[in-house]
Amino acid sequence: MISQLLNSIQPYAWGSRTALAELRGAPGPTATPEAELWIGAHPLLPSRLVATGQSLPSAIDSLPESYLGAQVLAEHGAKLPFLLKVLAAATPLSLQAHPSLAQAVAGFAADEAAGIKLSAPERNYKDQNHKPELLCALGEFWALCGFREVAETIELFDELSLGELWSYRAMLSAQPDENGISKVFSGLMQAPLPTQRKLAELTTAACQALAPQSSHFADELSWAARIGELYPGDVGVVSALLLNLVRLEAGEAVYLPAGNLHAYLGGTGVEIMASSDNVLRGGLTPKHVNVPELLRVLDFRPLQLEPLRAVAHGDEHTFETPAREFRLSYFDVTADSHGGDGLVTIGIDGPEIWLVTSGECLLEASTSPAQRLTQGQSAFVSADTGELRLSGKGRIFRAGVAHSA
Image (cartoon, rainbow, N blue to C red):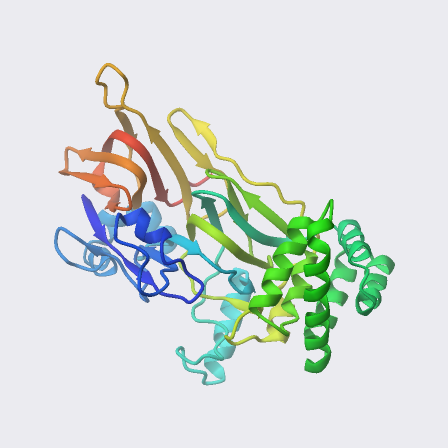
């Protein structure tokens, strides 16, 4: 079965008024920010099958083996194990991390035992699942991801030359590893609020002054200055200086495992994740921040991070990650000068979502009516579809479940 999907948008305040509208070919700017286009079966905002109007989770419930396949059903249960999104950040998201599977199970049980409602803003764990995620940029995209090597952070602090940060620099110098990073981050997050505000204000001012003349950390200081302006008095502006700043070009990606402190700063990308809503925040947000729980789940080991590039397997370009719940790849379908349609044939053995981000593509199978998708449109392909034929001209993303090793 192939069915076009009707999807909904999350209007979070940090979203863009133009990016998702342009993707859909809708008028812009929009009246309110559009942050995330959700494509999948998550109960908070499920997609619907255009052919029947049925919600995707309801359709899966009615025919789980046909839609998911025996292998996915056995490993993940009667649910779609991944969620696909298009994320459009006009301003930075919160500093955040996601728990491991064991931490999510234990945290969910603790919240349940404490009688905290699922809808309560102070609830830490909304489900019992972890949330590894991958984001592929559709254009220039900036993000903070994982703690930087200590030597580089010391160099940045030296260039910033802010007296109020010397004690934190000394901690890093004394323990240039995850222990030093843990002490610095914990000290910042647990400092008295007046101290946090003063550090944030002084750091923001220093970054604003130094960014235009910095030879090595101009981008880091510029982003910190912007963060400080958006969230005045938030010590997250200092924490941001401990993290790797990553710039992605179109087609490059970043993979975020459990315990990785990160913040998306700006840009548009296709994001796929395990179907979970567990987020532990560390600042740059008006939402609930639970410092002890965040410190418990964070991985403080320095991370040497490079943009992830897709590996070509014939016509398909796949991002290789250790995640079991999802796999993301894309095809660049090109009609040739002699009238060919760039036909590609793909075997289907699990539930998939296909999303066109440029051009127009046709999905065909002997078991289902053909579906023509234009930019911004998507379709669900069930496990029992068999062989899928893809043609057209443009880029189309394929989201599915990772194969067993």
